[in-house]
Length: 217
Image 1 (tube, helix red, strand yellow):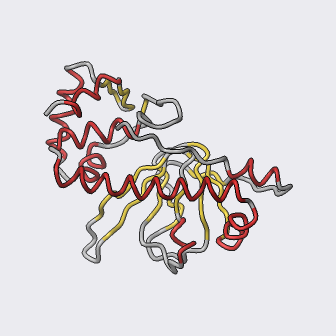
Image 2 (cartoon, one colour):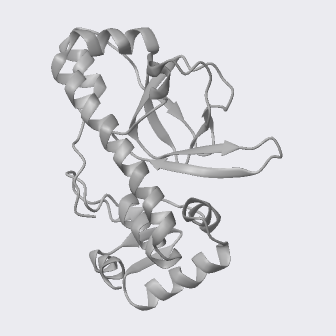
């Protein structure tokens, strides 16, 4: 949790400096932003709210692969030639996103060196996060995986200030993300609450004391 992720500029501010006007797109809670199998033709940045990325098997089994918040990008794989979406992006809460067509995003990255460097740093940070998630799945207990996920969702360890209140996230979603059962998540959530690490009644409030779970062997 000590690694800090470099922040990336608000893409609307970058466009505004260049004299370009883009309007954010609003999505209601549970509304699909793009679906698995859709053409991969744009990059998105979240301005407000949270977005859930999921993948579904041919048998209909669904897995949550990421929860993203304000400032995060998604759909960027189209820049590397991905022709169709491999995941579904859904608004976890009411949210506002900026949609940049692939060609425009590519042009912006070529023409604005500062933004390009920041975006590259952000993308590399995402890759490191994925590697850390894999290591977490392989070597840590489900209790530690849950604690780490809650801290990440609350922005602990990032350059931006922590946002200790996490909007409503179901225990099923948390279980899918850490590879365990809902009953195990419920057990650990109750334990964390009794120890004063979190508070929850719908929204989840995370205290920095939850870090102690990660530090204990």
